[in-house]
Structure formats: C-alpha cells, structure tokens
Image: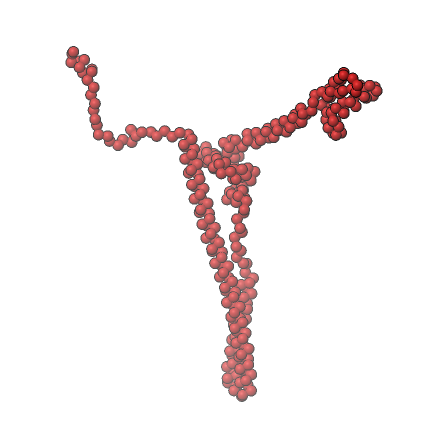
Length: 287
C-alpha cells in the first residue's frame, strides 16, 4: 500500500479549545406558536403591571382625598368649638362687668369691657372664617369603579378606542380574546399604524377576523332559521290518504305547501282538510 493510500485511509481528529465566537453561536429557532405564547405572556405581564400601577395610583388618590376631607372637617369642628367657647366667655365677662359696676369698681369694669370688645372681635372673625369654610367646594370622594368590566376597561382608553371596545365587548369579557386584541394592537403599531386611525382599526379587525366573525354569526342564524322552516314544512306529510266509508278504494289527495299551512292556521288536521277538499271538488265548488 502506498503512502498516498495510507494517508487517504488515515482518519485524523483535531481537538481545539473552543473559543467564544458570537458569529458561531447556535441560532435558536423559535416556533411560531412558541413565539405567540411568549408574546401573550409578555402582554399579560404588562397588563398586570399596568393594572397594579393603576390600583396603586387610585389608592393613593383616595388616601389623599380622604385626608383632605378629614382635615376640612377637623378645621370646621375646631372653629365651631372655639366660637362656642368665646360665646360662653363673653357671657361670663358681661356678668362680671355688671357686678363690677354695681360694686363701684369702675377701673375693673373698664378692663372687663375691653375684654368683652376683644372677644366680640375674635368671635366675628371666627364666624366669618366658619362661613368661608362651609362655602368652600367640598372634596368629593372618588366615584366607585364601574362594576361593568367593559366600561372599566373602556375608561382607560381614548374615546374612539373606548367606542370600539363597547361595540366588541367579547374582547374584554373573554380573556383569550382579550389577549388576542392586545396582540393585534401591538402588530398594528409595529406595522406603522398610528393608534385611533382608520388604518389602525382596519388592521386590528383584519387580524381579529372581526368582520368575518360577524358575518359567520349572521349566516349561522339565517341557516338555523331556514332549517326550522324547512323542518316544520317537511314534518307535514306530502299526501293525505282519505278513506271513503264502505269502500276498500283509497283516494290519495296531495296537499300543496300553501294548503298545509292553511290547515295549520285553521287548526285542522291534514286528513280533515283533505276530506273537505274532496267534498268541495265533488260539489263543483273547487277545481
């Protein structure tokens, strides 16, 4: 065997130390269904974070409003108590003033009179302040959140998007359809459609098959109604056998659909209607 053949049959294995090479990294292939599921998880997580942030903001606003309401009520209560106290003090001062005058203590009476005037001034200021407090617009508590999930969802949207959601409530009530709607929004924006534009809503409805879904529902309803009519008409026999008394001969009378309906409207059995038809034909009153 030649050296060349030996070299051809010789298998050589070369081991090299692997170096990290970004260009040589294995490309991970993501299946479409896995990608959609991952996107749905991301959208669900984002929605949960948004709802949590909205709840926190609402709770903070409710606490702030409640604190302001308590503060206003406390201030009114304090001023009201101060006015009541001043009125009592004023009555006591007036009694002391009268006593000082009777006792001839004119200097003491003059001092008491100054206190009465000062109390009257304070009383007037407090009364004016109380009236201003009561006239000030009161802080209203936050309105309760709507129990309707569609309205609660629409309240967070722009007017046009809210109208679309109200027209298609199933995309809020059904969690699976809701995830599809959010995914359709992301796809529409990724395709360059500005939210709330005609192209944006067209893209969303095309992704969600909204038009075809509505048409399918109408077709199913129409088919169901037609099937009921056909079933009702087919339930009636095409022919009504009529036996003539005392004879083995049988006359077969075929009733038209209109005649069967007429019999139903009159509350007659089809056999009785057929007998009457034969009798009228024999009398020449019916062709």
